[in-house]
Image (cartoon, rainbow, N blue to C red; front, side):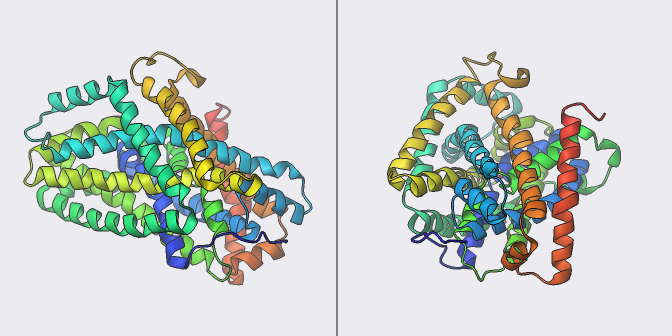
Length: 452
Ligand code: PFF
């Protein structure tokens, strides 16, 4: 395939692993995963989620990196070039286009929640959690959600932080940010884990998350777990594809995928364990929903030794995680603009910032002034964006990528790019051709009510 010249590449395989782990580890792990586990009955959800990561997530991440590296282009032109190489129709470029749109839609709500996190860093640091009880925590959170201006300011700051990194490019921006933020994130995580083991109720937390109770596995929980596997590993929208397109040829895709998937899953599980030990030690409710870390954790931190410091560290950790994910949400669109138009990276970042800033304002309003405005499926703006992207667009993107790699591309090309041993390749190919697509289709059929 013809190569595009003058594209940036990661300095080495570790910077790629850090950046991809940075994309994967985010609000999905720390904000969403614990509350989804809480709402969906604990261990049952965790086990189904782990199965989805192993059966669908890992093979698809290898697939997405492989597509990106072979194409050496942004996801839209990349799919077009790969389709041409396989003598297939240009319509495959729509996988890339849908991905770019999904990224922009996700950032629309992601940045609003990340804005809440920034606000909670300040709250924790100013000692506001001290002596907080359940009623007060709920009142604070509700009052916060009822002030659109404040929410918009935090959302604006987060968009500026994200675009500030993206505008600097792959090496000076993305790579540099991940090199600093990710080690800091791991260090904070270890401190928090030690803290919650020392002062929390670790045994109950582990029981809640790991004692299998399959009676609680409902079809709805399976759907959520699969959607979340996509969201958590950043799959199905071209973020991993564009990161893969900056990867040098000799690096093992299988090995880097395993590192990223293990890091992502481990962070989700460890944060979950830490959070639920604080929740149980304080007799709080694990099924509190999206407000879990905003309403229950302040109570826990407020009554524990060194709570203000630990609370601040916790929210800084979440902010770092969200930041490194947000930059990957816009990179596909930025790559597409800069590779197709004379527009500079800085300008492109500014343009996308405007789009997502406006979208975010609509999301902010859906928590207060526009609470009753319903979009798709009778859901408000925030829920519509979340469900549309997580449960539909990402799995659909993943399904199409699996079909493309498994059925459309020439085996020779796929093997060449993956470079794995014969047996491992056969296993991967079988999964990507049959298991992953069937799992996704089954979930879609359930979603549309065709199977009960
Ligand atoms: N994986 C991120 C998280 O778990 O928060 C969210 C995400 C980032 C989804 C990038 C999709 C994506 F392309």
